[in-house]
Length: 132
Image (tube, rainbow, N blue to C red; front, side, top):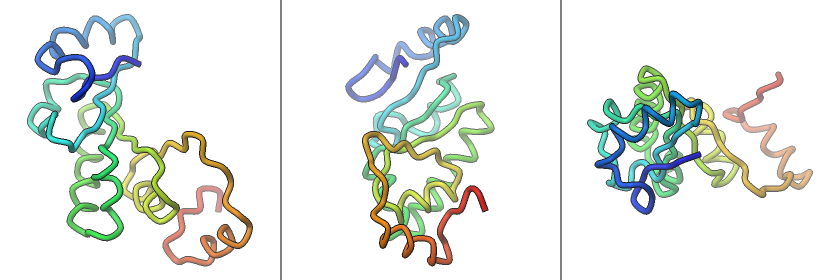
């Protein structure tokens, strides 16, 4: 998936480069959103399929209610613009919060939880239970 971001394709080319890719069915993404490379106002000009949250932004959603509010509203805005938001897995608490906020959590290379941690997670009131 072609990506736009601080170490990717230049963002100044994005409004012209992205539509031909999407018309061919090639999905596009903005990487490291929240790092300062892509400001909120630019989202309307970037017709991408996916926005990837910067790891530092994702990691703050449990400890900082304001960060959770910003991420939640970013997800809502991004959906209205026709995209999705994802973040790399941080830990079970952050992942659960991100999921509740509507963010897709990617588990690249993560393994299953040990049984005792899984049971503790299930007992939590705020645990996300997709199949219950």
